[in-house]
Length: 219
Length: 224
Image (tube, rainbow over the protein chains, first blue to last red):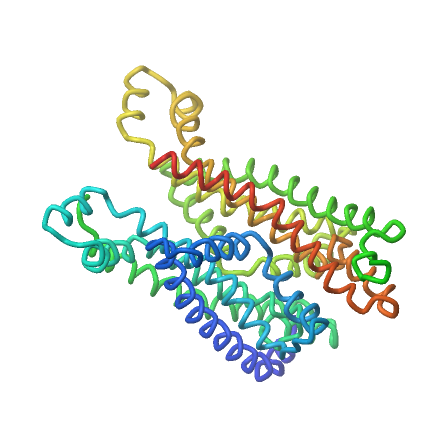
């Protein structure tokens, strides 16, 4: 283990670190938007769109991100659609994450107890009011554990961007190993870099999850 | 259709080779799951026992696997393990080690959660009947926990299968690596081969994972 080599490579890893965070942020935000829209379509059973979303969610959740990325990056140009690697990465991550988020939100909505819904109906609420004031506030709170797991999962999935040569953390480490054969040093930096990103995120999300739990009623 | 690139899939022994690559992924996933579930059960039980030191160490172990992406685990196993353990095993064995330890970490948390959610009265009744600690786990806690943990276990299996797509990154000849070899060999005649080969691999992964995740969903819906 050579500390000199570690120190020398820190600026390169710094860049990759920021790129990983940036890509993860865009991916998570995009996934949340796609997930909320998809779960609302499923909740209200919007004709036609509902079927499309159901197929999308299953395909996104049951295929590896790596193949999704290869398809976007290598196969789509054959059809005449050439995208930059980072664009492919972001689209891939949002495609994958949107499916997971939709599933998480749907799970939360279906977890709202039927007593709550009956009570709402007894108060004379219509379908829209029921969704707006009873199901969504509690449903989102119930989705929190899934949301937390998905956010952590998506941050880690950015490591797969390395296969289409996006210079994020994992790709950078591999490049450096390929050039200088110092696998111990570079892999150590890589693990620490992910720990620096993920530990605060995990702690923050756990704290938020405990806070939000008070938003649920009943039990 | 004679000049269509779809022919690439079935030309010569291409399809057989692709299936052979898929088999590599399947056995690595299966062996890792079996080892990981056994280890995970042991770790999960240990985490419900009162010994604080053991619980702390196993918790650290779990958190390490939560923080490090699986592709990085593969690289750690591929670059670091052979040298530090002075072994010269094939890359597929290193993948099995990485995957097994990962599965064990995740499964230990599933087991711990399931054991802890068995109602306390069950445990108390068992103790009142004079069951020993071992009998309590063997006849009361584990069978009930197993039922609770089944959907999460199936979901974990689908994740392991999806993650086998990363095997090619540590130079294991899996279905994707075979696909790439075929593409390179046929690039001149069939520039569209990339579309069909990645398309087939996409469908193969979906065909394996979708039934499993649908099964897990049915089971967890039944439990509610």
